[in-house]
Image 1 (cartoon, rainbow, N blue to C red):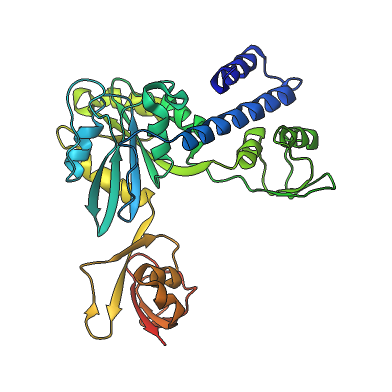
Image 2: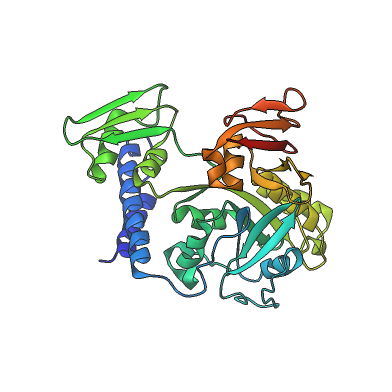
Amino acid sequence: MGIQEKIREIEEEIRRTQYNKATEHHIGLLKAKIAKLKAQAISAKKSGGGGGGFDVKKGGDARVALIGYPSTGKSTLLSKVTNAKSKSAAYAFTTLDVVPGLIEYKGAKIQLLDLPGILRGASKGTGRGKEVLAVARSADLIVLFVDVFNPEFDGLVEELNDVGIRLDKKKPDIMIKKRDTGGLSISRTVPTPHLDDKMIADILGVYGIHSADVVIRENVTQDDLIDVVVGNRVYTKSLRVVNKTDLVNEKYLEQLREKCGDFIPMSAEAGKGIEEFKEKLFQRLELIRVYTKSRFEGVDYDEPLVIKSGSTVEDVCISIHRDLRKNFKYAIVTGPSAKFRSQRVGLSHVVMDGDVVQIFAR
């Protein structure tokens, strides 16, 4: 029996089992077995190699993946916001390869990938879905892109979840340190009503872990523990876009918001919602602009250094040149992060959007 057949068999058993306190433990073990099989399937795919057209070199300050069903207008959006020419037409499966483009916004260079439309079952290989979703794992942000007449975000989230991509979640605060002997030592800093010691021991046992120090620092579930044990999960932010909204009225959109939550209304063909899309990308990626100052040339306002929010002067040094970190003496910062103009700071100083930084080296 193949891996996918084993997965389907266990999934069917879960569907047949009514969830309650008495079956919670059994279902948790079945979930652990499914997660292990899916991880094996991903590893097997990697070792076997992939098809052409899906390996795109990372470029720019951040990478964004467009994920959607066929014929939703992703290719049209790519051509509107970048200089890339992704083929588009009014029928499904136009884009057969990953097509990259570059958005330039507020000094940032954002690589946007138009991925082939996926079908239900993509995570199991339907329509080369595994290869498509594997590219999404490398993205800093995933855009869920749907048609106004088929606004099925949940299906896209489910497919991404099945290949280990967790949208808008942080990694569970669970530490597992394996040991050769001594059994399991489990400690918590908060109660975990959904995860007792026996459940933890049995889930770890599925993965052959019988001796380890386990520390749990937040209220977690069986699924959270499984994710940490499997270890191949990717935690990525997302942005939701509904295209072709020029074809419906405002009342329809309000009903859609009640059903789907917040999203960007767009008509890629008509160019509506494009600027809001760019701004939301910039915000969700948490990018900031830092301006460098030279002793001889002054402040370079034309080419800001674009880095992640929360970055330090050390990160600024590394972004400019690695040797600058090694030879760093001090920096002078003027702007939102400075307590006063021309503040002298060290490597650990956290910079903010709009800061001017001058680095002094030994």
